[in-house]
Length: 274
Ligand code: G1P
Image (cartoon, rainbow, N blue to C red):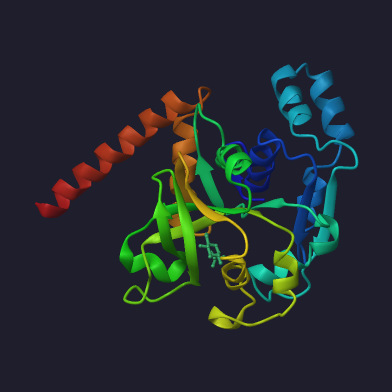
């Protein structure tokens, strides 16, 4: 529910999915996350207040973020046993069809362009199979990600030959890493059901995905956009700055404020040096 610019992270994720043509939304939540479902509910009191105050622009925003009736499904992951386990918790809701996953703390900013999931679906319509969003990271950071062993590299898409969860930089098969967007085939659920514990003692999605390789097409997509890790404090602040600066309502004002901060910091730096 952390706000990124003017709306919660979960809403950014939902909008990206909706834009990509996704029509049914499954949230895997946990203890004390009730706010997530409340946020997408019809908000009659708020609407009445905005109507009575003639706040048309805000009314439009609230209406634009309403979940269509009967399209939100929720399930709970009772214990934090890992990403693979969280996805397994949604198996009955997904059923026997391909599905997409968004990890909302991985924000991908694509101003003026289709969102990351739209880009993936466009490519998936040609390749089929399974697909992950990928990005190169400094080798020192491979221990934070699922890392690809790459096959044929077509530039924008790359064949996935293997996947390793959070390898030591010295052992990482490449520096091409999985970012929180996936399109997967339902066969993944059978593999998750083994409940094998991997890195960090957690049931890892990466380990189950690795077992699909060779049986189904598996590709990485180098998406067009900038990714922010909103699971880290600096990443979250950086994302807010990027979205704020790109926002026509506040961008100019924010740039001026930032300019002032930079000048202040430089002057302080000079004073300190003196
Ligand atoms: C998860 C996945 C990892 C992926 C990452 C992307 O890790 O397990 O493979 O690269 O998301 O952000 P987490 O960040 O939840 O530890």
